[in-house]
Image (cartoon, rainbow, N blue to C red; front, side):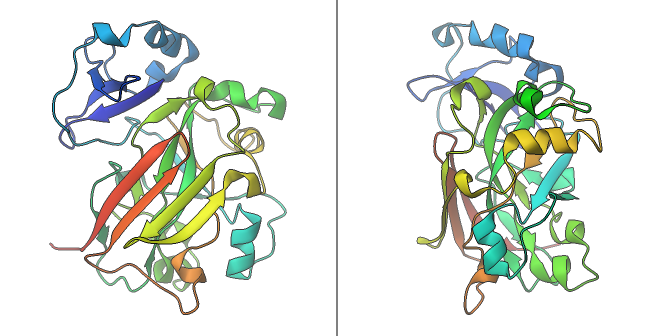
Amino acid sequence: MKLLRYGPAGQEKPGLLDAGGTIRDLSAVVGDIGGAALSPGALAKLRAIDPASLPAVSGQPRLGPCVAGVGKFICIGLNYSDHAAETGNPIPSEPIIFMKATSAITGPDDDVIIPKDSVKTDWEVELGVVIGSTARYVEEKDALAHVAGYCVINDVSERAFQIERQGQWTKGKSADSFGPIGPWLVTADEVADPQNLAMFLEVNGHRYQNGSTRTMIYGVQHLVSYLSRFMSLQPGDVISTGTPPGVGMGQKPQVYLKPGDTMKLGIAGLGEQNQKVRAYTA
């Protein structure tokens, strides 16, 4: 099942993508795609609905972030062996955790805004994991039972803010528009193996990232279990699980985003994002 949110920013409605690619309006059935609506029971009820019984949405509406009311936006750093190598860093002995401000979250095709004073805005295609039920001190063997589904995330990053200003990763990751999520949330039952998904990212038609979740150092099961030791994971929390090689910082010479650039990125079975890059304006 592919769940989504559509409509103007701040006024998104819940929707479902049917087998023919038509968006169906879910607003008469569920308030939004988030929180309790992501529980196993709630998803089972949505799954039982015949999409043809729902009104079709006409035209091509704006797609919003596929999860509403995200409580925590948790990110994992250097979680691909080949990405760690391109940055010159050793493989982490435990997952590196940082937070991304929820105010960075935008729709999958919204503009990415280069923040004021930025000189090194970069890209990162990542697998997003959406929590469906509360997880505390979860054993690894039980971890996937707490996952509602998966989505595409572009973990946009300002490297100078992240690395050169006292090493505070969060402030290099949290500018407005730095967290495009979607286009849809694919429920976990439709993702046979989250550790075998091809992923890519292109800038101006040039493919920089061409990887797979197979090269994750710490997989989804481990990450959910590990995180639950340090904080409770709540329905609607999002985990961005790291990026494969090919980021701008890893190029020789380095390449960073500039106004007018376009990005296209996607993960097999989870859809694609398309973003234009523009400069910050007051």
